[in-house]
Image 1 (cartoon, rainbow, N blue to C red):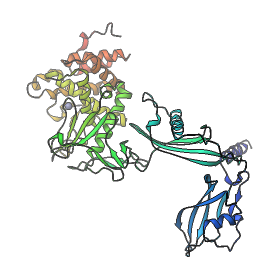
Image 2: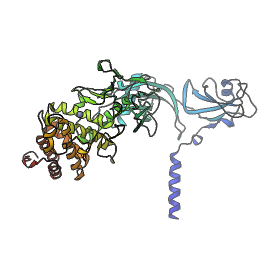
Image 3: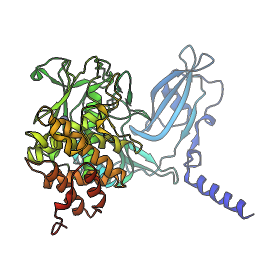
Length: 526
Ligand SMILES: [Zn+2]
């Protein structure tokens, strides 16, 4: 019995929340106003047949659609004193002779004591300001500033009549809508205001179709499928800049320029395309380096923000990312921009997520301290970049593996490097005491020392994001232009200490790659 009462209670509450136009006071069922067997030549005759005063009321022909029995169904929009009556439409049927058959359905409100002068003094810019304020009141944009009325694109409004479904009372209102399209934020606000610009109701919806900044594209490559970009459910929105029908891979922080297999980057152009066409820049087995580069650069920025807690290297300027650079089996940071080669017969195009994070990691070090002229610094810089690349994967998938760039190589090897066992490639070292073997010819092979440390400290129980935060802090605060293994490791230890982390796993992990940090003084740094 108690259970039954509970169910009834929920049901009646639910039905009270649902709006029922047929329960609205004063509405009439149009299908009962027109008797059978009458045909009409136009909508004016329907207005008359409905018993409406044609001085006040009118019907506007809306979209039509072929239905069964050789009939065409058409929507008729209802107007009162020239103003659209929101929420009330009729449906008429036309026969094959284009005559209205008299079968009209829908509901009509009763409109009385309407103040038609309401909102007469409202100007366009007042409405625009009200809509911008509505967006601000209904969204949290931490550290990204407020929406201004100048951020509202495609703004439009219409003076209409609104009938409150619960009371049946009609009033003059403004329906306003716009597109807000600023970096990382694409929304379509729409709202209803009364004649005094008080909000009646509204919605700030995420754009999901049309020229929405979510063009279609396929990520990944022939062997390793990637993301499906697009506006739909289960698809990933690229959040491109939109100008009219054109999507542009340009955000506040990153711009993608396509070199189109040339070797002179000055010929590169900002990637622009018709949003509806989507991206199709397949080269050398990679589906869309442009889409992947733009997307994962943004992801890396998000990683830096939420895990690294420092995005400053990318906040002051827009970083250029060159794609489809020649038939080049590599990617590189040149001090100003990142460039992703198109690969060769061994590797796919280099614009894969961990390489993108890697190159942007170099940008951080560049901004911090212009490190990596030679020797140990090169190895430390490369390892920091690897950790940044791995952070992109770890951020997107808690079940990430410890291979580096395992979606890049066509055959033979299953990854570019291995955090858990850097020596697996037969060249990279994993202990600082082996550095003498590689320092002369290939100091970058020392990358494995800090790569292995980072794996070990995670394996010792330090969460990825905590270790990442410590390494980023070390890079920003402790490392300098000549940082080597010991100095760099000590910086990481001090950074972890600064963050209130237990430094024990850091010490033991560094010791396992040959770096004894007993010299590293933490006194006074806490
Ligand atoms: Zn590198």
